[in-house]
Amino acid sequence: MENAAVSGKKLAAGKAIEYIKDGMTVGLGTGSTAYWAIQGIGEMVKKGLSIRAIATSVQSENLARELNIPIVPFSEIDYLDVTIDGADECGSAVEPDQRRWWGVAAGEDSGGCYQILYHHCG
Image 1 (cartoon, helix red, strand yellow):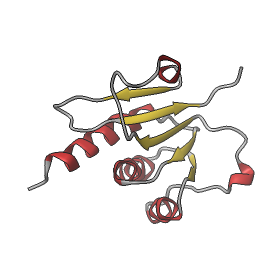
Image 2 (spheres, one colour; image 1 turned 135 degrees about the horizontal axis):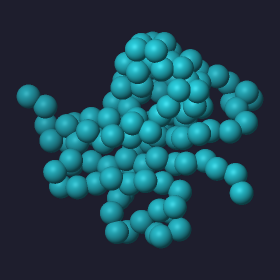
Image 3 (cartoon, rainbow, N blue to C red; image 1 turned 90 degrees about the horizontal axis):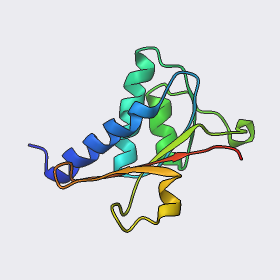
């Protein structure tokens, strides 16, 4: 049986990857929530999703490669459409200025949160 923390991280990761669309360049975070997001992205790629990705750690890069997620070197990245990573904190403590950059979902029912960093120009 899975504990509540793991269930929450899986739920948060699953919610976060809903933002990924075909053709995007995706930043892959590091840590336990990112692990579940990368697993989910791997399933999406297996079903035909076409993306490019860059990872924040060797651990995440290795996992992505195992799951056939196309990894590109940093030198080939001009722009990231979205970066998904676990959030250390979430809720009302997030400053309003940060809220325009990332979506945060949290709740006692989910037991976890995620951050999605939208990269945009201007």
